[in-house]
Image (cartoon, rainbow, N blue to C red; front, side):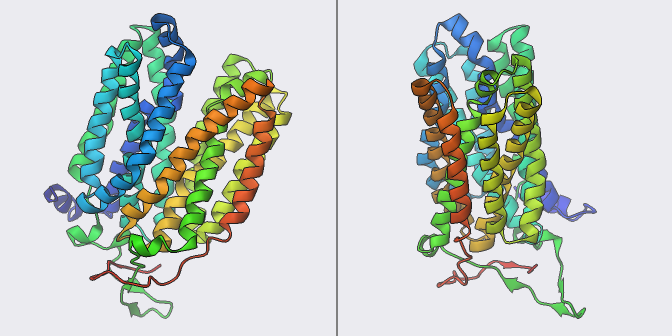
Length: 432
């Protein structure tokens, strides 16, 4: 299966890594068939026709998220063992199939199984495999590459709910699920099956398209070894767990606010239309934020950038308490989305820079459960606070405090230094 990639890499006028990036980015668009904003569009027609409660429908997302936390370690191992192409291609195929099957999932058990499978794909194999393969193809340009990768997520986050809404308004919700499933296959199945390659070295290339490295004096400098941490050694470093817990906490805040953002804006006096605008702007600014934060992670230590990201998430959480005009509501949603973009693009850079490319899949696999578990907690916690108190105020203050504490904690996630045991035949990469 490397023949098309090898053939193209020798004939393209640019580095084949950009083809890898575009192919991986297609999965970020396609995975939004299982996004929370997409299922929100189906909430009313499902409740109206099938008589289901909104809690029952939303529970399918939490069910899938919890299941994703259990499979993430295995996904990381599969990425390292069989390659990102196998994981991504099979994930895209299953995601399309599970999305289409929702057209006939008219009993709760069938709905939970079909949507739960899609949500697992959304939360675990696609983001892990896509970010790992991109981080293996780029070293010096890793930040901007990951920024572009996760900026593409916002394309699907905006377009899939709009497409679903248009079809629901016409033929109906069953046809909408079928179209979304077909779009998953059309968008991503061919690129990931035919074009993804695990490492540039597999087809005779170096990361970033380098052929040699030129030092400050103009002399050629030989390639240097990247860190080659094993999973066992990485798990002994405090930095791994500080990053994992810190990123997980930020996603707790993200899920707690994103899941309830429309209701929160309505409570603050915004109309349904303007609440929708707030959601759309949040998604759009998330894409822009992914690009900028990713670029900053190349220029400055990733832990410093991630600490600023945490503050960028904590600030709007507190500002929402004062949002009593339309302008303030949509502005705070935009700022929050901008911060969330950094949560997506900076952590993959930090993990790859700290621990190298060799065991990056399994390392990401053991850290990803923090994200999926805490996302489930955040969404439920905000709902419980509202049910008990009649407002989101306590939740927002708590989320803001968690963001500030996370910013402080992440500053202690210092690079672990040299791996204590180097794996045989370390991966070579040109140093930046």
